[in-house]
Length: 317
Length: 277
Image (cartoon, rainbow over all chains, first blue to last red):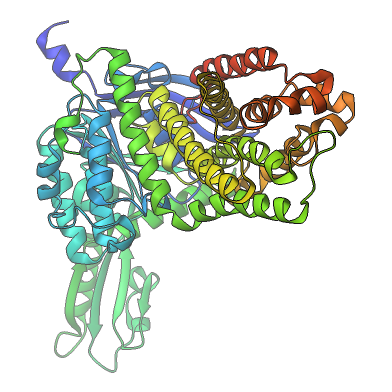
């Protein structure tokens, strides 16, 4: 193997992964490649198979078919030495309630052959001063930071993050996102499962959308928005004009809200704006179009549009 | 504990497994000590039974000078040792299968054997604590003789250690039965009661039907109870009351040893924190 090959060997490589529970198909034909230092998001509604996929990558679950390699090994057959190189951020349950922050961190550090210093972790996650506090007495944000501390105390090369900022306020979320980006910058490969699209947008260069156990979309996160979602062209109309006064090419897909503002959702905003301007110049008097805005579609719109398309396909088939 | 306790990758596997087992034991004991209500009730139940039995039945067992309180003390010690493994350990492991503890550990390089060592040592220490409390009550209320001869102390040592370890591996084996954390607390009580009735804890062993006695011999509690009677009751009791005039401790030692060895071997081979394999 030459140096170039080595560099390009993905840290996570899954090919045609299948899994069924009884007669229920949980995963089908999953392909996933993640390179060193990359953050890849797995997005999908509840029951889409996200947990099953991550558990297969973590070596907790078997697959029925396909090939999986994580850090060059098949997780199904991996041993302790392999687990020393992965980390997972799980949500703390009640099982840890009666232990202190330091007790949890010290014990977890001891399980690993080359742990990070607990004092460094405490510092990095802003847990200083809380070492002797019981987990039960931590706030939601502090608990989440301890979750992350436990996930990275073993200094993993691959980190699985499950809903890392659920239930946290905006400020705490930002600080956790920053920390996750730092980890990736330092070369940690990260698989993120989440429901939050803003989280995906902030963290993941690449996204994989899972619906009913199949990948319905994968690619660069920014393209999810471009490829699937319509752009909104919004404007006001000088009274007494109404949306119904627009020419058919615009009026047919226009919606007018209670405040009079008109929104046209389109895949081709340039065409809509040019049609609108041609119509505006044909109307006598001052420009009838006020406060024109061409909005970037939100990732949420894009994601929902994608789920709608998938659902519609299912209904047709 | 400081971060300096971590083990480097060059530490031999056995040393590492044992040291991590001790770290797990410490964590188990911390968890146990902080569940104060559970510990108090675990201790209070056998103490209450002992005091009730001894107070209600004040006569002696036929053909001996042994009072019911004296007779019941070794039996309830044996039952408490069993419950430390059978009820306490099995319940705690069953809960950990469902509350995320095992899932968390399954993702770490912690050896399964270290986790099991932690569970077993916690059980041994809990059982020792219960035994001490019950002996204090037995000595104070029912004039139980605490033996001082080397032979009796030796018998106590092997009966206790083999018995508690057998109880622990039995608990590990049974911990996968409850289907939820909620049901874990109630699943183990009926079989525990059943074993106490057929093993001579609540009912004098010689008055149990012989087929039931034979069946009880498969399980650890009968031998634990017989061994404790051998330690804490006068020799005349064995001859006058026990079936065949003997506790048959040699056979008991063999059966307990088989439980311990087979149980630990099976546990280490099959227990893998719930990973699908």
